[in-house]
Length: 422
Ligand SMILES: Nc1ncnc2c1ncn2[C@@H]1O[C@H](COP(=O)(O)OP(=O)(O)OP(=O)(O)O)[C@@H](O)[C@H]1O
Ligand SMILES: [Mg+2]
Image (cartoon, rainbow, N blue to C red; front, top):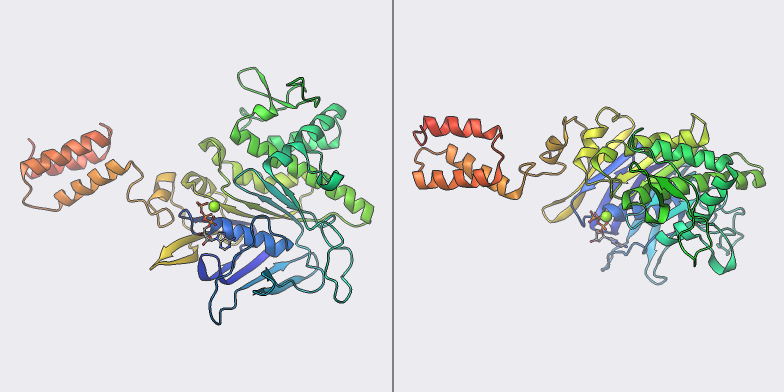
């Protein structure tokens, strides 16, 4: 479990510190402040491989860019620090094999994924003196199309991909298929909208693969490659969870070792493509999915997820436990990017989250409505309001507020008191 990340002279700020909560870490903040970057660095700290481009350090006289981190592995706590080596143009590796943080899965917003498996990516041997090369793949990095079509570098088959594996599991109706059904069920937005596989089909003369399908509410069976963006992201995640777990079990058997009990999810834009109904359930689904998949109730799950969704935060209120969960906020303060842990407070609904410090909107409405309300409130504070001004602002309010808006009561009361309306 990731416990701490401390960055000096790398990324959007001279210094960023992150003390992770043990279960859920939600990261919010304006566009372009470095939320995805934090996930990239967290992934690197846990696995020592970059999922995207490596972190670029700040340059300058006397600057020593450093990434320090701490995580709890199966048996010990790993405390490490890496300084940027400008000569090598790389982050200095620590000698010896890295620690073992458990399974790590990173879902990026473009549909790509990375997986780190302690059985398959954890170096077997501590490198001999002077040789610091791993004897196993550093991690599994999937582009969006590799999730579907497989990962086959240099003629090796590392992964068959969703289409082939799903079809083969379904054809055999074996354990992975039953796990896939379970995971799809847990990740579905509701019982009524459950993601259910249909019959295998073929979609083209040029593609000899049996294609999995999904049953839709409108009675069709849609090939998975034609599924909607939201459904695709979730079924890709479901497939990779089952694939990762299955391969982890196989590899652990081969190595004659226990399966891991620690899983870390890094998820960028967790609500991406999801309808509000689904946004309300996705995080709780993620927290329970490994239990459903492994059938064990002692799996430790840690999630670090980026979100821009006020509804997602409102939906978490009954679930959020300040002892185990944290809400992080990146913002621009006096021209500098800061990262703060927000004091957790229930806000009640999505609108209240929108106007909270976390999203800092003036009003949870259109920009026009916000501006009209602002002007109206300014008028209401004055004594000398002219009729033309009043008419103009009232017109703006009419153009942007619904007839039933509660603000009208306040406005009419004030207008009557001020003699502007009878
Ligand atoms: N590889 C990198 N090396 C150094 N700094 C980076 C790197 N990638 C991103 N950054 C820093 O992070 C900033 C924002 O990037 P990032 O994509 O993380 O934003 P974000 O908060 O995820 O935005 P959005 O909400 O739009 O996705 C960049 O402007 C840059 O300062
Ligand atoms: Mg981002």
